[in-house]
Image (cartoon, rainbow, N blue to C red; front, side, top):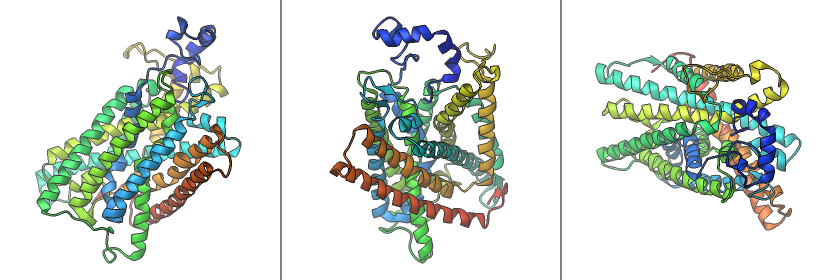
Length: 489
């Protein structure tokens, strides 16, 4: 991750410079049992831990909006678009994984972050643009996950309210307290220094994602059986139910929702930096992890999205589980929504670690002598392996507070998800991986491979612009009727 735990290990590197050099120079010596070829502590990640990180990042709030997205596109275009995005994501992720090392795939210089990879292969303004887009997208994801977690916590409270009070009681509840609860939890978990130390959280979150996806799938099947028929149509929601213009905007927004459901390229390099030293090369391991994770998520997406559409048809909700919502068995819905919340706690951390590391590395380089920034405190009540850094505590807590406050002001789950997917998909998932791969492999301009890669990039750019427009239209529509901090209807 990032700088592989710079904060946690900064003091150690200073005291072990000679050992690092020795380790790097001597290769397979005693010192290399503790250090990798770059002098950093031995990486221990495998295909399975990388897959867990990816699944944790990918199967999140996005899966809950897929039934709605398919409802806008219909039985033909919905699954086709989903399959298309999965293939594009896999292909561009494979291109990006080849850029982890510059030069030879087993001995070349490592690029620790997405920005490092861009800087090593591209130059100039592209590096700054990439950094802005990556970190802005991470902020957006943090906001989106806070909104999604509060919706699930709210669903638990309302389901229990309806179970006790009956459906006549409107059970008006504000989502604000639940966003605050999620924010407090994130302040605590954000003190975990780096990717190396959150593998357990990723594995737990991945298990939770399968839990609620399976429950959603099961409830969808039960609903279809209860309906006695499969709902939906070949072309999606009908003109008449919505206006022609709304049909266009909704369809474009659906593209953005599906793109967001596969968005993880912006943290791929950081995940790859946790994989143990070759053989096999990190890029080969990462490709396998990508196959496993993208195939797994696509299967769950198809099942949950299609079954949700089959159950609800044109009335498929923006959030699948809150759509089953306030019906029996309420306890099963509570379990599913609780699993979502636990999963999103882990997903939030997986996504935000690169941004945390970037700011902390910059601060260390800017003020290397500051005890506030580089000093660490051993707390008597926690395990000896964990040390508190005051700058990390202050900066990460401030970040969580800021994203929580913004979430309270903009709780438009579907439109926010669509917009995030749109603005991040083309540049981070397609454009930069394609451009870096062309430079890394020295692909000749106007060759058949170069033309195909550029056509792929152009097609995804068109989708990005159209999806962003659809999501902005949805957000503007929501703003006309929204009152901040109000209770849920």
